[in-house]
Image (cartoon, rainbow, N blue to C red; front, side, top):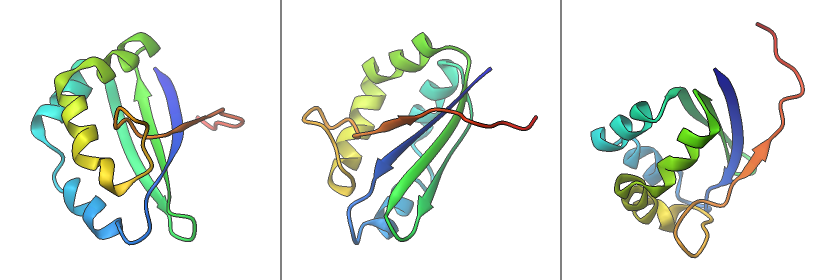
Length: 104
């Protein structure tokens, strides 16, 4: 299992709506994530900077990358685009984080 961490940026004033849209996450999107080998996925907020820290355990990078090509993911990105910093295609701008320590 690979551990993946990255940060995204929420727009000011959008936290309540961001939480609302995730409660619950669309069942079809959850199914896509699980079908592509994603486990133990969580997103945390840094309240001062509005950075979203995401952590997921994945089975492989190729399956993780393939999620972006699914219709469910594209619909989710479009649905979330107004709440966070995104690219032109509505995918969230994200910065991968390198693991520098892990205690098992």
